[in-house]
Image (tube, rainbow, N blue to C red; front, side, top):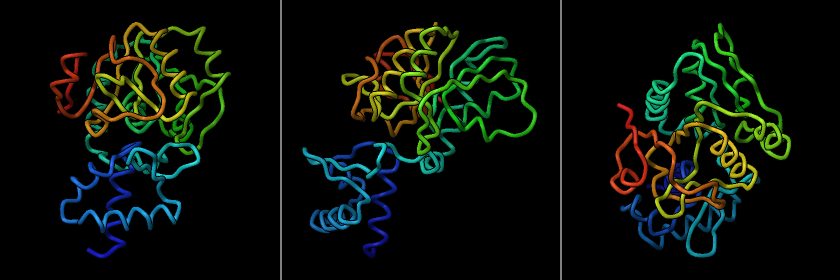
Length: 246
Protein backbone atom coordinates (compact mmCIF):
# COMPACT_ATOMS: atom_id res chain seq x y z
CA UNK A 1 0.00 0.00 0.00
CA UNK A 2 1.46 3.37 -1.01
CA UNK A 3 1.70 6.24 1.54
CA UNK A 4 -1.24 8.15 0.02
CA UNK A 5 -3.53 5.10 0.37
CA UNK A 6 -2.45 4.50 3.96
CA UNK A 7 -2.96 8.12 4.91
CA UNK A 8 -6.41 8.18 3.30
CA UNK A 9 -7.33 5.11 5.35
CA UNK A 10 -6.15 6.87 8.52
CA UNK A 11 -8.28 9.92 7.69
CA UNK A 12 -11.29 7.71 6.92
CA UNK A 13 -11.03 6.06 10.35
CA UNK A 14 -10.65 9.43 12.06
CA UNK A 15 -13.57 10.94 10.15
CA UNK A 16 -16.08 9.02 12.27
CA UNK A 17 -14.36 9.41 15.64
CA UNK A 18 -13.38 12.46 17.63
CA UNK A 19 -10.31 10.84 19.15
CA UNK A 20 -8.49 7.63 18.30
CA UNK A 21 -5.60 6.20 20.29
CA UNK A 22 -2.64 5.20 18.19
CA UNK A 23 -2.75 1.58 19.39
CA UNK A 24 -6.44 1.42 18.37
CA UNK A 25 -5.51 2.80 14.96
CA UNK A 26 -2.81 0.15 14.67
CA UNK A 27 -5.37 -2.60 15.39
CA UNK A 28 -7.54 -1.31 12.52
CA UNK A 29 -4.55 -1.30 10.16
CA UNK A 30 -2.88 -4.63 10.98
CA UNK A 31 -0.87 -4.73 7.75
CA UNK A 32 0.85 -1.42 8.54
CA UNK A 33 3.90 -1.55 10.82
CA UNK A 34 4.09 0.68 13.89
CA UNK A 35 7.04 2.62 12.46
CA UNK A 36 5.25 3.22 9.15
CA UNK A 37 2.11 4.32 10.97
CA UNK A 38 4.11 6.83 13.03
CA UNK A 39 5.64 8.26 9.84
CA UNK A 40 2.21 8.62 8.25
CA UNK A 41 0.89 10.36 11.36
CA UNK A 42 3.80 12.81 11.28
CA UNK A 43 3.16 13.50 7.60
CA UNK A 44 -0.54 14.17 8.16
CA UNK A 45 0.28 16.34 11.16
CA UNK A 46 2.76 18.40 9.11
CA UNK A 47 0.01 18.94 6.52
CA UNK A 48 -2.36 20.14 9.28
CA UNK A 49 -4.78 17.31 8.53
CA UNK A 50 -4.62 15.78 12.01
CA UNK A 51 -3.62 16.79 15.53
CA UNK A 52 -1.39 14.60 17.70
CA UNK A 53 -2.58 14.98 21.30
CA UNK A 54 -0.87 14.40 24.61
CA UNK A 55 -1.57 10.87 25.80
CA UNK A 56 -1.08 9.13 22.46
CA UNK A 57 -4.30 10.02 20.67
CA UNK A 58 -4.94 11.76 17.36
CA UNK A 59 -7.91 13.60 15.87
CA UNK A 60 -8.86 15.35 12.65
CA UNK A 61 -7.57 18.91 12.63
CA UNK A 62 -10.51 21.34 12.56
CA UNK A 63 -11.15 24.86 13.76
CA UNK A 64 -14.35 23.63 15.37
CA UNK A 65 -13.06 20.33 16.77
CA UNK A 66 -15.79 18.66 14.70
CA UNK A 67 -15.66 16.58 11.55
CA UNK A 68 -17.58 18.44 8.81
CA UNK A 69 -21.15 17.19 8.41
CA UNK A 70 -20.68 16.41 4.71
CA UNK A 71 -18.02 13.87 5.69
CA UNK A 72 -20.08 12.40 8.52
CA UNK A 73 -23.17 11.83 6.38
CA UNK A 74 -21.16 9.84 3.83
CA UNK A 75 -19.74 7.46 6.44
CA UNK A 76 -21.83 4.45 7.55
CA UNK A 77 -24.78 5.98 5.69
CA UNK A 78 -26.67 2.66 5.55
CA UNK A 79 -26.47 2.20 9.31
CA UNK A 80 -27.43 5.82 9.94
CA UNK A 81 -30.47 5.56 7.67
CA UNK A 82 -31.57 2.40 9.50
CA UNK A 83 -31.09 4.12 12.87
CA UNK A 84 -33.25 7.03 11.70
CA UNK A 85 -35.98 4.66 10.53
CA UNK A 86 -35.97 2.88 13.90
CA UNK A 87 -36.07 6.17 15.79
CA UNK A 88 -38.99 7.39 13.68
CA UNK A 89 -41.08 4.47 14.98
CA UNK A 90 -40.91 6.03 18.46
CA UNK A 91 -42.69 9.17 17.25
CA UNK A 92 -46.49 9.54 17.27
CA UNK A 93 -48.70 11.94 15.37
CA UNK A 94 -49.05 15.34 17.10
CA UNK A 95 -45.85 14.84 19.11
CA UNK A 96 -43.75 17.90 19.82
CA UNK A 97 -40.14 16.85 19.38
CA UNK A 98 -36.61 18.18 19.28
CA UNK A 99 -34.23 16.93 16.57
CA UNK A 100 -30.55 17.71 17.05
CA UNK A 101 -27.82 18.50 14.54
CA UNK A 102 -25.53 15.73 13.33
CA UNK A 103 -25.61 13.13 10.58
CA UNK A 104 -27.92 10.62 12.28
CA UNK A 105 -30.39 13.37 13.14
CA UNK A 106 -30.27 14.74 9.60
CA UNK A 107 -31.40 11.34 8.33
CA UNK A 108 -34.20 11.41 10.93
CA UNK A 109 -35.38 14.85 9.81
CA UNK A 110 -35.90 13.50 6.32
CA UNK A 111 -37.94 10.62 7.75
CA UNK A 112 -40.35 13.04 9.44
CA UNK A 113 -41.24 15.50 6.70
CA UNK A 114 -44.53 13.79 5.90
CA UNK A 115 -45.61 13.33 9.53
CA UNK A 116 -48.12 15.39 11.52
CA UNK A 117 -45.60 16.46 14.17
CA UNK A 118 -44.01 19.66 15.42
CA UNK A 119 -40.23 19.66 15.07
CA UNK A 120 -37.97 22.06 16.95
CA UNK A 121 -34.41 21.89 15.71
CA UNK A 122 -31.01 23.56 15.64
CA UNK A 123 -30.07 21.57 12.55
CA UNK A 124 -29.71 24.02 9.66
CA UNK A 125 -29.92 21.16 7.16
CA UNK A 126 -33.69 21.82 7.27
CA UNK A 127 -33.06 24.93 5.16
CA UNK A 128 -32.12 22.76 2.19
CA UNK A 129 -35.25 20.61 2.38
CA UNK A 130 -37.46 20.79 -0.70
CA UNK A 131 -40.78 19.25 -1.65
CA UNK A 132 -44.00 18.72 0.28
CA UNK A 133 -43.72 19.08 4.05
CA UNK A 134 -46.50 18.09 6.46
CA UNK A 135 -44.54 18.66 9.67
CA UNK A 136 -44.40 22.02 11.43
CA UNK A 137 -40.71 22.93 11.67
CA UNK A 138 -39.32 25.59 14.01
CA UNK A 139 -35.64 26.45 13.56
CA UNK A 140 -34.24 27.82 16.81
CA UNK A 141 -31.87 30.77 16.64
CA UNK A 142 -28.25 30.82 17.68
CA UNK A 143 -24.65 31.05 16.55
CA UNK A 144 -24.16 29.23 13.26
CA UNK A 145 -21.48 26.56 12.89
CA UNK A 146 -21.40 25.81 9.13
CA UNK A 147 -19.07 22.82 9.49
CA UNK A 148 -21.70 20.82 11.36
CA UNK A 149 -24.85 22.66 10.19
CA UNK A 150 -25.72 23.55 13.78
CA UNK A 151 -26.95 26.48 15.86
CA UNK A 152 -25.86 26.85 19.48
CA UNK A 153 -24.83 29.44 22.06
CA UNK A 154 -26.56 31.91 24.35
CA UNK A 155 -29.60 32.63 22.15
CA UNK A 156 -30.22 28.93 21.55
CA UNK A 157 -29.96 28.20 25.27
CA UNK A 158 -32.35 31.04 26.13
CA UNK A 159 -34.93 29.67 23.68
CA UNK A 160 -34.55 26.10 24.92
CA UNK A 161 -35.16 27.05 28.56
CA UNK A 162 -38.75 28.00 27.69
CA UNK A 163 -39.52 24.95 25.53
CA UNK A 164 -40.66 21.46 26.58
CA UNK A 165 -40.70 18.42 24.32
CA UNK A 166 -42.50 15.09 24.26
CA UNK A 167 -39.38 13.47 22.87
CA UNK A 168 -35.86 14.58 22.00
CA UNK A 169 -33.49 12.96 19.53
CA UNK A 170 -29.86 13.85 20.10
CA UNK A 171 -26.70 13.17 18.15
CA UNK A 172 -23.57 12.20 20.06
CA UNK A 173 -19.83 12.17 19.38
CA UNK A 174 -19.10 9.58 22.03
CA UNK A 175 -21.05 7.43 24.47
CA UNK A 176 -19.49 5.50 27.33
CA UNK A 177 -20.89 3.83 30.44
CA UNK A 178 -18.37 5.69 32.63
CA UNK A 179 -17.60 8.96 30.82
CA UNK A 180 -21.19 9.47 29.69
CA UNK A 181 -22.31 11.39 26.61
CA UNK A 182 -19.68 13.72 25.16
CA UNK A 183 -19.24 16.28 22.39
CA UNK A 184 -16.34 18.48 21.21
CA UNK A 185 -17.63 21.90 22.36
CA UNK A 186 -19.08 23.45 25.51
CA UNK A 187 -21.92 25.08 23.57
CA UNK A 188 -23.07 21.80 22.00
CA UNK A 189 -22.79 20.00 25.35
CA UNK A 190 -24.83 22.70 27.11
CA UNK A 191 -27.47 22.57 24.39
CA UNK A 192 -27.87 18.80 24.68
CA UNK A 193 -28.07 19.03 28.48
CA UNK A 194 -30.85 21.63 28.34
CA UNK A 195 -32.83 19.63 25.79
CA UNK A 196 -32.61 16.47 27.91
CA UNK A 197 -33.76 18.35 31.02
CA UNK A 198 -36.81 19.69 29.15
CA UNK A 199 -37.89 16.46 27.44
CA UNK A 200 -40.22 13.74 28.66
CA UNK A 201 -38.06 11.15 26.91
CA UNK A 202 -34.63 11.43 25.31
CA UNK A 203 -33.18 9.22 22.59
CA UNK A 204 -29.53 9.12 21.56
CA UNK A 205 -28.99 8.32 17.88
CA UNK A 206 -25.62 6.67 17.80
CA UNK A 207 -24.02 4.22 15.39
CA UNK A 208 -21.83 1.63 17.07
CA UNK A 209 -18.58 3.33 16.04
CA UNK A 210 -19.30 5.85 18.84
CA UNK A 211 -19.56 3.18 21.56
CA UNK A 212 -16.95 3.46 24.32
CA UNK A 213 -15.54 6.60 22.71
CA UNK A 214 -15.37 10.02 24.26
CA UNK A 215 -14.94 13.58 23.11
CA UNK A 216 -13.81 16.72 24.95
CA UNK A 217 -16.87 17.95 26.86
CA UNK A 218 -19.36 15.90 28.87
CA UNK A 219 -23.01 16.73 28.21
CA UNK A 220 -24.56 14.39 30.78
CA UNK A 221 -24.32 10.95 32.39
CA UNK A 222 -25.50 7.92 30.49
CA UNK A 223 -28.84 7.47 32.26
CA UNK A 224 -32.51 8.30 31.69
CA UNK A 225 -32.04 7.97 27.92
CA UNK A 226 -32.70 5.38 25.22
CA UNK A 227 -29.94 4.46 22.78
CA UNK A 228 -30.88 3.83 19.15
CA UNK A 229 -28.05 2.13 17.27
CA UNK A 230 -27.11 -0.43 14.65
CA UNK A 231 -25.69 -3.00 17.08
CA UNK A 232 -26.21 -4.34 20.58
CA UNK A 233 -23.61 -3.70 23.27
CA UNK A 234 -23.59 -5.67 26.52
CA UNK A 235 -22.10 -2.94 28.72
CA UNK A 236 -24.21 -0.07 27.42
CA UNK A 237 -27.32 -2.27 27.27
CA UNK A 238 -27.04 -2.95 31.00
CA UNK A 239 -27.08 0.76 31.73
CA UNK A 240 -29.82 2.07 29.40
CA UNK A 241 -32.39 0.60 26.98
CA UNK A 242 -30.85 -0.02 23.55
CA UNK A 243 -33.03 -0.20 20.43
CA UNK A 244 -31.31 -1.89 17.50
CA UNK A 245 -32.08 -0.95 13.91
CA UNK A 246 -32.48 -3.84 11.46
